[in-house]
Amino acid sequence: MIFFLLVSTWPVAVKPRGLGTSKNLTGQYDLQLSSNCLSLVRKDTKETLIELELVSVRRCGHTDCFFFMELGRSAATGAGELWIQVEDQVIAQNMHEAILG
Image 1 (cartoon, one colour):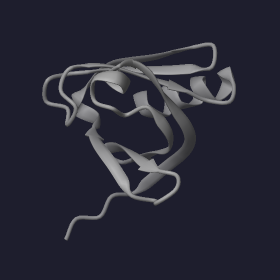
Image 2 (image 1 turned 180 degrees about the horizontal axis):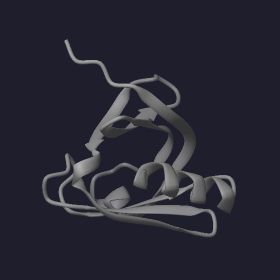
Image 3 (image 1 turned 90 degrees about the vertical axis):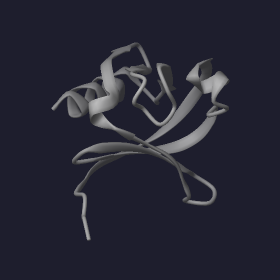
């Protein structure tokens, strides 16, 4: 059995842009960072919608209250961008730094 250390959880809103639209991911989630993956967990059901291995993240960044990731073909969603809105730019910066780390 494999266990993953949960590092951080952030309340987020996936925006209707890029993969948010094409993969029907738009909505309110908890974004959970573990030692090797990111998970989008539905707020209402606590069900994991999708798990993204960190190795599939090509690049990521933040601007204002948004955090974005460019995912490669090996990601569960396929290649594209995922745009995530958070409460403020400090949270977006913290997410960026934690995921890069």
